[in-house]
Length: 130
Image (cartoon, rainbow, N blue to C red; front, side, top):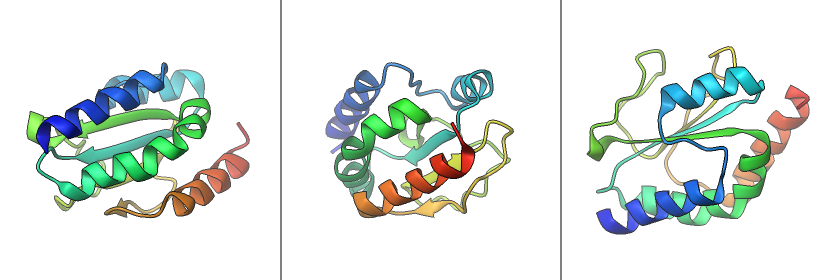
């Protein structure tokens, strides 16, 4: 499971030329480009994380790549979640963060439908005016 998750994360970052796996670098890029940050907290031992990346993120990768900056923290690799974000240890948890650092929506816990994500991303894109 861990190897599949790592391969999937590499695949996603490879599809997304503007992405970075480091939350701090991604936040800096979000500020510089004035794009919202799409941030996922995951763990290699989490089956729902794998499903979330595979079934939700990949189908929406073009929209995320174009209009958001992507960051992924893998807790199993020792990555940390910034203290500014409410995190209760549940993975996957997804955050959409304005370039100012404010959460644009409440954190999304767990795996959810790709269409649900698409609708949320479209609403944020339309409201944000990128």
